[in-house]
Amino acid sequence: MSNPQVQLNIRFKAKPGKKEEFRKELFSLIEEMSSEKAFISAIVSDNLDQPDELLIYETWKGTRDSWLDEEFTKPYRKDYEVRLDDLIVERSVSWLQPNREWGSHITNAY
Image (cartoon, rainbow, N blue to C red):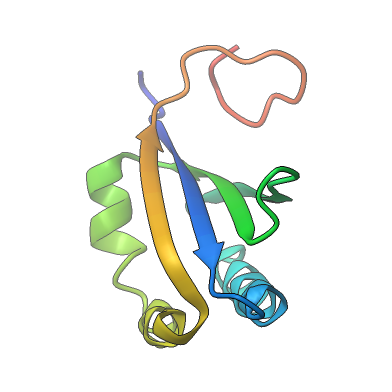
């Protein structure tokens, strides 16, 4: 693929009573990262079956390695990562590469 893209699907489980505080921190992070050159989109969803869970689905220009080298090292992410200890009990990350899309044309895989 000549213009690679990478997607992150991240599931967070908030500590009891901390979901709204976590959501505020997450939205603040997204506001910061949305101005990055490689940023394409982010969607945050609530898990209807697990009230303490939030999911974020991000699409970025580049590869997993370029994201880790260029985006994860941003100073504003360090502060966010420190605050997570008080807000979440679990986080799982899936790295994805789009290969086909219908509808939105967020990716270049159509």
